[in-house]
Image 1 (cartoon, rainbow, N blue to C red):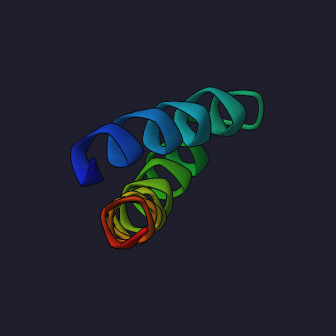
Image 2: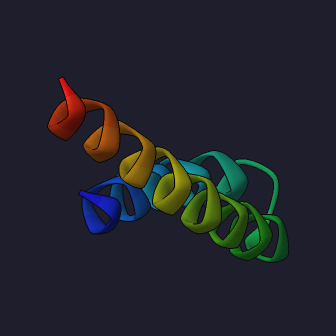
Length: 50
């Protein structure tokens, strides 16, 4: 689930960042990767607990 979150949010960050420029896309993609991993793990834990 973490990998799905990383992929989705990182891709979203990339496309939003490309509206500004390449470096912004890289930075937002990295931030999105970290947030997506956290969100995916959080969602998986909630789903498995109940």
